[in-house]
Figure 1 (tube, rainbow, N blue to C red):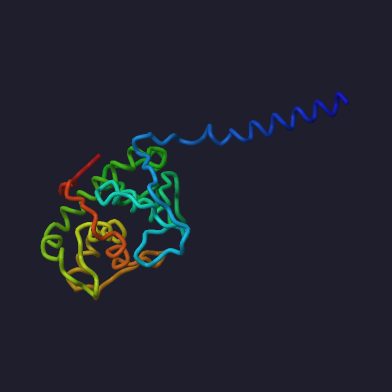
Figure 2: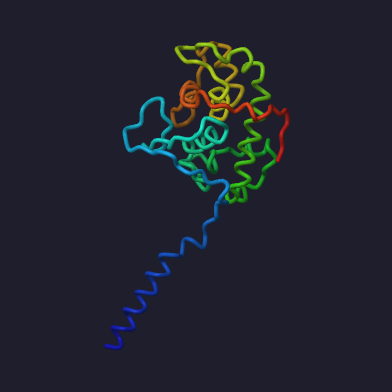
Length: 209
């Protein structure tokens, strides 16, 4: 009987410890970076919606925060600690070359730091806005291949494919499109991220952390 009690007690202890073990290794996300979900849906994902692994992005505001969260959800499901099969990192799936441009060289530290990831995302948007400033002026409001061009669509596409590829897309009037390694095109991002007001993000030529 004593032996049975001893074994049972050990099993209970292991069960309790295993339930909390992972918590010790997770980086806590600051409260001010968390966005409350307003509405979610289990309906099939439609072409115009922002989805991740079949889940539809909860509805958020149409300002920069909504834009930011929609991009993060599309890229990683909002997971700061995700690394994809090609080595892209974090909530917004940055590659090492882009991180270097932003002044970030330690990818391990970057992956563990949600606040840093948010800063990099914002200054990268500012940088792309500078590179594409003339194209934004020329093409916003135009119809291209049945798609209305918006500033947020342009900058979302630049996050996906780089500002240079977005320039070629716009200046060819949608004839020169590219896709990422998972088959997502510039036109896809132009359509999915249209209509966000990100006018509060100012264009910067060489932003750094």
